[in-house]
Image (tube, rainbow, N blue to C red):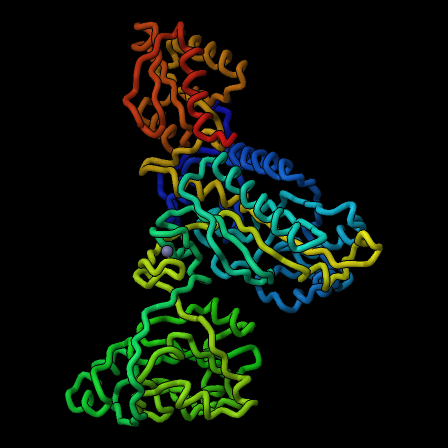
Length: 596
Ligand SMILES: [Zn+2]
């Protein structure tokens, strides 16, 4: 390819609102252009990279016996009603009406369309296991589409769905798929990536993993242990925490004028007369903090967590199986909660859902709100003072669960060593779906005895268009991306300094032709730009190998060679050995991404 013909100009200015390096570089280097929020077009450079990612992905999916299909981008309301998700999914799904006023959706994921297909095609145990996959455009109406190509409203996904006669078979296949994902990401050049336990979210099922590239710009927080293999998205991470146990003291009500936050409460309790009254010093970890939400039915949800910890909203939603919103005044008033002094005692449990984090249930002698303005209670022992007093009916509205947010420094749930926090971008996920979709959509197969059974399913996604920016977040310097060879738009970037020199032009064209004959992809800068701007553009595009020809190098019968990542100084290479040298350099580079 000649750079003078390549569609997609480089831009000098840093685009406004582009916070992530990948976002800046993809726009400035001419890979992508924004149409509107979260909607981008890909230019030829990006198409070449994304095409390579798709090719590697198809190879790995075919290797685990996948069969590619194409599923519709648009579905009828009825299809999504079969699984119950037409109602369950909120504003994330794009919805529209056709000319006959019929409700339609733009598919954000394809469990429903794939089961629609599979239930007529897969009807016997002899056909199982089966895996169908697609590489297609999906839609999601993100509340905050940002970060360039990381969080889009229209994007390309590889989604795979597997069907099995038994849980054991699914489990074995899930492990195979996990390995296929490790191979895929390694082949694409992701280095700092991990698979972590994750939340099943709206998919429903028993276990799932997310694949993350660990980059400081990532939007997800991972909680990891450097002592063992524990790694989890913070949305599911757990810790036994460190719980203080003391002999239970008598419940004490005491006035706390002006103390509304945990910080204010701790400061207030530090006054000697108050400390004496409550029976000892009070740190944040000696308090129970209430966080107020409401559900769709506008019922109050009060979550209690130890004062030094925070609620992990995703864990709370999963524990309750409810969507949660900030609490409004009316549900708070009905349940007799008093913001700033909310506690379990005196709450009208008939009009609220109460979730007690394990940290609150296990701790002794906590300070908490008295549900009266300016009053708190000391020495709360939740089993003694709250749970025992509940009627059977009220007990059903009180949940004990792990809903606290695990942090760096908390003990690891596997080995008790201190946990660490790190950030990442999700680049893939694998989910155990069970019979969530096959059962609700009446998919059955005949088993060996001729009896109808419901197949169990797994689903497996890779964000194809997201992987390119995620790789750039991992591999870049301040001048541009440093793309791994397998996904770079071209293998070799060739610069001609002074292309008016007939010798330079002729040598460059000859070398390009020889390389291309060997299957090497070359981008030749034939724009007659100054060396400085040629090099700046080459850095910005990020092709891993570079060849520079000039009258000066030709005078030595040589060209200059360097790697985009500057791992070693540029060197002069004799033209007569050019092909052997470049072939070896490329072969060494390919080896780094080999998995066999
Ligand atoms: Zn550990």
